[in-house]
Length: 214
Image (cartoon, rainbow, N blue to C red):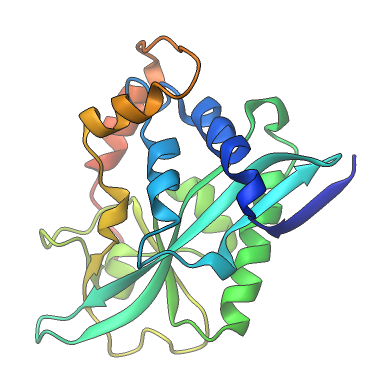
């Protein structure tokens, strides 16, 4: 299996959106928003092109990782610039082959070289803790509602990067989208049925789990 990681190019756009759609469809909720978010992300001010990569398997794009600017906002109003990844995905045909791990490690290595403070992401802890992500109370960083959720995960990119920093995480507004916007965009793709999966209930539970780290 020939594996290659490179920056996304315009020729990849449609293929990347198709793979994202297959990867996320009905996973967290009915249908998915990720392929639409990716589409509008590329022209957004928060998009970080240099950290957006695709992974090829035998010359065909089978996954990607996207980065945007984010920040930690302190109570005194001071903002600390961070970056965030997501969506990150691999084609269902190539799950459990370590491709996602390769993408994440590759992008983290470059982010460190580029001098960024920290990476923040939202997801299941067991997915990202192996890369060194921790969060919530560990770094005294909450969501805007002041609560520390298990799904908010943070990786400092150098020793002491988050020392004396506290506040709440602010992610790019490009990650937000309405059902109407997504449905209109989805008409550009072949029909897929929206239906229930147990993973949707797991996702809802994970979104409200609070951190009990001490």
